[in-house]
Each structure stands twice: as structure tokens, then as C-alpha cells.
Amino acid sequence: EAEVAQSPRYKITEKSQAVAFWCDPISGHATLYWYRQILGQGPELLVQFQDESVVDDSQLPKDRFSAERLKGVDSTLKIQPAELGDSAMYLCASSLDDLRGTEAFFGQGTRLTVV
Amino acid sequence: AQSVAQPEDQVNVAEGNPLTVKCTYSVSGNPYLFWYVQYPNRGLQFLLKYITGDNLVKGSYGFEAEFNKSQTSFHLKKPSALVSDSALYFCAVRDANAGKSTFGDGTTLTVKP
Image 1 (cartoon, rainbow over the protein chains, first blue to last red):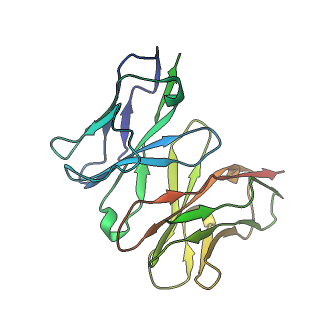
Image 2: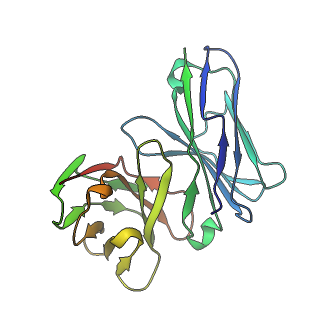
Image 3: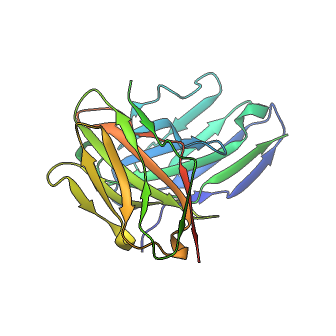
């Protein structure tokens, strides 16, 4: 069964350092999402791609966060510099085509701890 | 702005009893509605969705949900709960015409033997 791959699974970093997360979506999925999930809350969308284009990044703190999906396949989310409040689970998901209401498939996430 | 409310943080049921996990939503256009489940140390998994058509939607593991437009609800149900159904359940909504999905804060379901 195809899965969304994320790495690393866990990351501990010091504040002010840079950190990057990688996601490989299910093959053929046009839509890719990055979510942030804080304990006790639901996932919050950070950025959504349709192929290589960003379709929503309204909740992405653009002064420190960046995301790219250069060839419309895998994606990288970067934080620089990391802050204590960035500690959370970062989830990547993909969907065949969000515009048609297809469901999302989630990776296992990267748990980030900023110390 | 769209929103999702899951009014119960915790739902407890006995094995074999019916279960309901509640979800209400607010969206400006027609809704796409989803339920996902999260087991410990695992990613979110899709359960079922309402896009259009029959208001009663059937999904994985015997779960179903009913879209009620007048009450803006999409409650998740199962006729007979299993201990293995114990998990964290999320409802999500998006506007059918555009926009991102918004998730509720989740409901922890505990099924006791």
C-alpha cells in the first residue's frame, strides 16, 4: 500500500537554528499539504500545493518558514530560525486532487522539539 | 471563515454499544466533510467523506456518518463499538468551491470491554 513518507520522524534543535523536513507524497497525487499539529488540537494547514504551485500559504509564518515543491513531487519545509513555540508535530499529506474533494493521506509526521 | 466544532473532548462507550462522535460545521458554500482517525503513534487515516449525493455515508471499519444540512452537522456513528475503535477522531470541512480544509480539535473515543 502506497504511503506518504516523511523524514526525520523526530528532530531536536536549538532555538535560532535552521531545521528542514522532507515529504514524499503518494505517486500521482497532485495536492500536497503541510500541517502543524499542537498537542490537544487539530491539524492546522501551513501550506498547500497543487502540483508545484502554492495555492494557500495564508497561515505560514513567512518570516521564518518556507516550503517548496520544485518538481511537483516531493517537498521540503524549512524553519529558520527555529523558535521555542515551533515545537509541534509537522504532518505532510497528499491527495489525488483536492479540487475534486479527494481525501488526504497523511504521513506519520515529524515531531519537532526546539530547546 | 469556516469552522468545525467537536463539542466533546472525550466519549466513553461500552463494547457492543452504539457510538456517536459529534461534529458541527460552518462554511459559506457547499461543504465537503471528512472524518479521520488517529491511532497512537500513527498518522491520521481517512474514514469517510461527504461530497454530494446520499446524506448517509458509509466508510471504513463499519463507521457511517449522516450529513444534515439544516443542522450543519456530520456526526460519526457506529452501531456496535469495538475496543479497537478507541482512538482520536477528527472532523474536517472545506468549501466545495475553494479553500483549505479546517479540522476540529478532535474527540478521544474510549471503548471499554
